[in-house]
Length: 326
Image 1 (cartoon, rainbow, N blue to C red):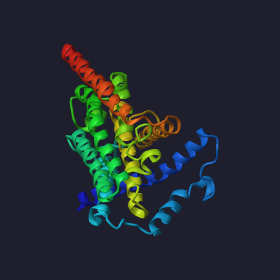
Image 2 (cartoon, one colour):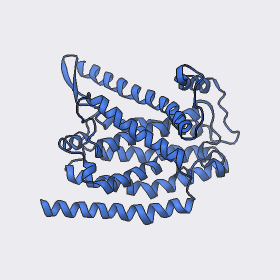
Image 3 (cartoon, one colour):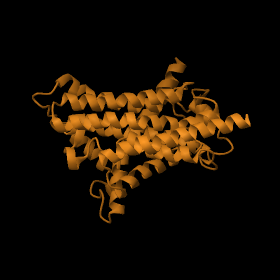
Image 4 (cartoon, rainbow, N blue to C red):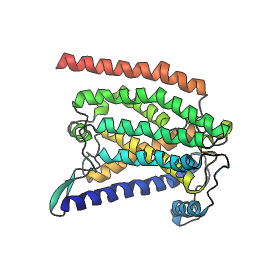
C-alpha cells in the first residue's frame, strides 16, 4: 500500500507540474515574442497577464466543438489524445531530482526507473505523430491531409538524426537508463565531450516538435492551419498541449543527456533541473521569434544531406575514440 501511495504521489506531482508548465509556457512564449518584437504581450488578465492561460483554458472548455460533416468522427475525436498521451508519458522515465524522504522511505525523483529509458522515449515520440496523421486524415479536408503527410515525412527524416545524436552519450555512459546517464556526469557534463551531438540534437528537437523554422505541417501561410485546421475547442487544446508537453520532454532530455540533468551546485536538484528545462524552452521561443520558415524541399534536404551524415560521423568518431581508449 505504501508503494502504491508513493507511486501515486510521484505521478500526480510529475504530470501535474508538466501540465502546469505547459500551460504557462504559452504565456511565456507570448511575452518573449512581445519582447523580441517590441510590443506588449498578455498584460490584462491578472498581474502581468499571469492568469491568461487559465482564461484561455476556460474559454476553450466552453467553446463549441465543431466536427466536419464528412469527417470520421471517432478517429477525429480520439486523434488528439493519441498525440497528447505519449507526449506526457515520455516524461515518466526522466529523473528530475536526486531523492527525498516520503512516507518514511527514500524515494527517487523519477516516476519509473526503466533500464531502457532511451528506447522508451524514442518509442513514444514516434507514436505521437500518429495522432497528427490520423487527425489530418479523419478531417476529410485537403489542407489537414497535406499537413499530416508533411509531419510523417518530417518525422522519418529527423527521427534518425535525433536518435543518433544521443548515441554518443549512450556509448560514453554505457547505459540506456537515464539515471545512469545523469550519474555518469558527476564530474562534468557530456556537452563537453559531445558538442556536435548537442548541436545536432538542438536542431532535430525543433523539427521533432514541428517548431519554427520546421513548422511545415501547420504552415498557416500555405495550409491555413495544417493538420489541425478543422479542430476547435478542447480537441484543438489537446493538440496544443501535446506540442508543449513534447517541447518540455525534449528539453528535459537535452538537459539530462548533455547538461548533467538535475546536477548543479548550491541550488536544490529540482531547481537546477527546472532552470535547465526552462532555458531550453526559451531557446524554442527565441528561434521561433527570430527565424523564417524553411521551404519544404530545404527542410527535407537539410535533414538527409546535412544532419544525418553529421550524426553518423559523430557516432563513428565517438565509437572510435572509445575503442582506442578502452
